[in-house]
Amino acid sequence: MAVHSGLSSGFIKTVLHFGPETPNARLVAAGKPLYGPQPKVKGYLSSLQKKERLCSLAVVPIPYRKTVVGCLNISSHTLDGVPESSRRALEAMAAQIGSAIVRLRSEELEHRQARILRAIRNVDQLITRERDPQRLINSACRELTETRGYHIAWIILMDGRGRPEL
Image (cartoon, rainbow, N blue to C red; front, side, top):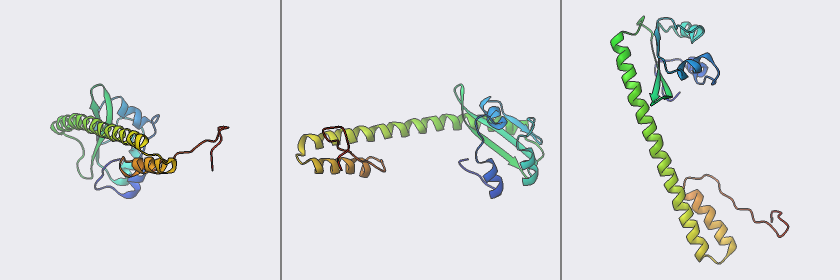
């Protein structure tokens, strides 16, 4: 769950993750929206819905081309249903969100790959100019952790028999 508003922490904890084989996940993966005061799929949040005092529920898969990249869930504590006009608006919004998510993920991947390529280039430059093996190792690890987004980097030197040097 990326964002939520107006729900109890207990409810959030319970619905934070659905395994891929659960009815909830299968419903979303099918790409068909679900609307109603009572879900049409047995067990889909029914007891949680009652406990949270939710009167209506909209489960709208977030599509991108022919795949589902997320799910928009809208509920109300006061409305008994989701009007047809709201359904169309939610589905249009979900489609736009899907395109935006894929574009942002693609941009992030592109930035991450560019950082990795810069790190490779910088380490390659270190290799050609550094003559001290220990400084080379320290500088290469520092390059990867300080400037390229990696959290941990280490290099293990092996002895002539293939065992790590200590």
